[in-house]
Length: 151
Image (spheres, helix red, strand yellow):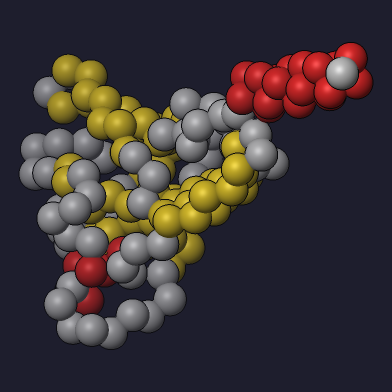
């Protein structure tokens, strides 16, 4: 009987320990300035593969070019020239790709063009076109993609 009680207590302690070490999927913050006023947009995970405690979760959605209307929009007219990318928890690494919005609605999904980021600053294109951006970040628990639209 003691063995059963000790085993049950050990399992409960292990479950509690795993629950306390579980980490939610991080969020991405886009920080920028419009007319000398600071703006912050929080971007939720668009797709991810994430392990938290004893559980693993995956969420896959449509291609970023099919995401318009479901992702944050930043109006660049009179707006920012650059965005500061910051995460709710620092990733081990991240990369950014983009697509010009001329590809929207065509059912054609070319590879995104890599975009350079320096010290967390993403400089936006000055060519007057809109772009869909995808940020993919990696942590020991998994990878997460975030999508937003700048037009």
